[in-house]
Image (cartoon, rainbow, N blue to C red; front, side, top):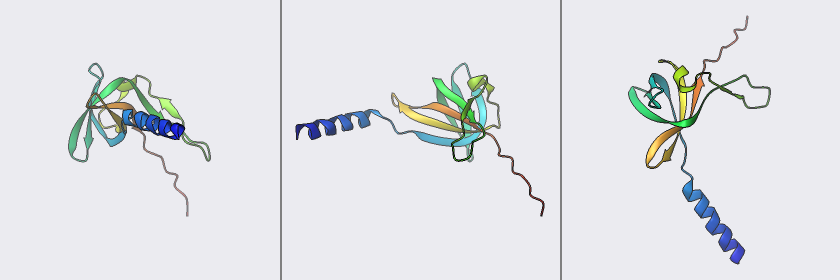
Length: 116
């Protein structure tokens, strides 16, 4: 009985500290690598996102059959992002503010044309 109660209390305590992550997809409008901020246009609205100093900036490589695509770090990090780039920003709430923990550079997939 005591073990079940203890396990329940631990589970609640651990889940309370974890902030749910949210994803924002849009186009980069501007980047300020010195201030660790990014302005992303989502639909027709601009959204300023603070970026954590240790945030991952990456793109996805080519996936092998049946496996997820590997992450490939973007050379230059946040400063390498340019206006107009499609990105997916993963944010978490830290100290009452939404902070980006990962920025994925979305590259357009090239489709092969089949001759018919």
